[in-house]
Length: 351
Length: 247
Image (cartoon, rainbow over all chains, first blue to last red; front, side, top):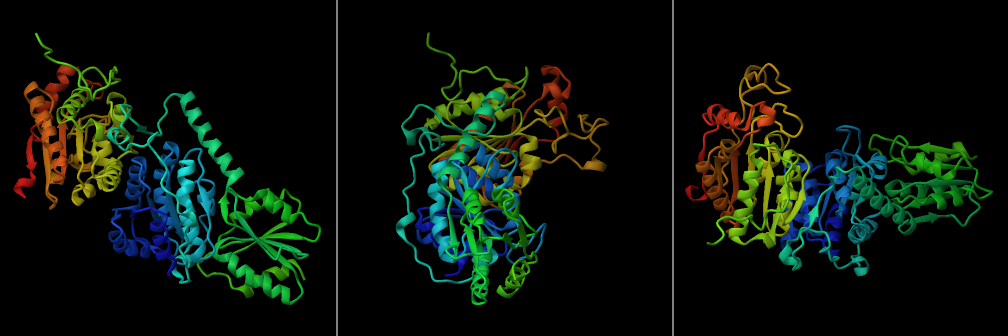
């Protein structure tokens, strides 16, 4: 299946039958696919008038207790910043998929990884984080989308899947496993699903405004506790060739990490060992794991290889705590670096 | 002797923060009375704006969501699409609906989303201290039009009811006022009619209510009513602009 379509189907298989979206290259195929498919499963499909409006359709529906998601790409995600901040402040669950394209501004329509900081550090104003997952294949996109709904509901927080244009556009074989299908949680404690639905005389209020400073502080403490729990419980990552006496550690995610695998295989043929740690969750970030992987005696340096001007590198530098030098390689126009280009770069670090 | 008047069940036992002479209190009460009369409190979800009515949710006893500035019609769309059985209304002021939220209201109305919007038009931005609104009258002084609104510079005020009525999708669009008792009675009838259309899942319904803001107009409540009658009503004419039957 095409990545974009698989992402749409994954949401349905995860029990999410509500989709609001706005077209934007390179992910419009999700809306095109779901405009037909949602009808088949008696779900809700609506193309909103802008990403701004869509983010609030998501908020309203989520606040009323529905499982809901949207997909967009970089400039569209920027438009959703405000809505996502509101949702985090009001503790509403939803899934947002960003199929990254070149930026900043109108940028380009080819793949990039240049929204890393936006997604992991500051998806909107105020003190909040998103749980961010980054698939490296269409199959992984499917399983991450399916996991995302239960994670969003577990934490009552928006969750973001950070893909790139390549993941969205390419076709790969996909299996829809039931492993991640979770029944929707009971939201009667907080959702505005109608007092009659809850058989309650107490009304629910979904808001993010806390004019009293103590109340606002308390809300922020509640949010922080969630992010601390994510750091304890939700880190996911994979390693490649880490059993070897590697001299270099690559940290890379998504499509870029697949190119790095090939580069690592190339280097191995020349007798040069390179390992990779691939974060699958970007927030929470596998800090301790990266430190441990970098801190082995044979490892001379760490390389952040990303399709950006150097965003994840700052998290890697922080994780490595100065124990080894951290280098960056990347391209930002939309061309995915080739294995040969990566190999050439790796050669500049080890001979 | 029986009870002649009582606070509606849908209205909370709460002193409001609104200014003396503010018509928000009147409109809140009308909405609450209609909800009681239609017996829909158990499935109602109100959506509060950003503006003086940002705390509207404190004055009602049913489910409420707080929208970002201007976005209430989009939130209402989300709710009605996933839970068409819920009764949803947005309550919005000049800035919320006619400025930042103009795209959201036009598109929700055009799609014919089956919710109701109550639009409180008092020709100024109240909560933020009296700045000019898209509905501010020509020559009206506000904190950001200190020399009076100049139509040659910033155009004429927007007649939102007419704008929405010009859309092709059938709807109920009306403009009412709460400046005199007779108008208040008519406003309640309009709100009830609008809510009934939603109960029939018939169309989008829009009730614009010409209101006063004594504090930011720099007038007493009584002077404010007079100013609204003399300066606003000739421009913002009352009446039914669109009904689904006429479509």
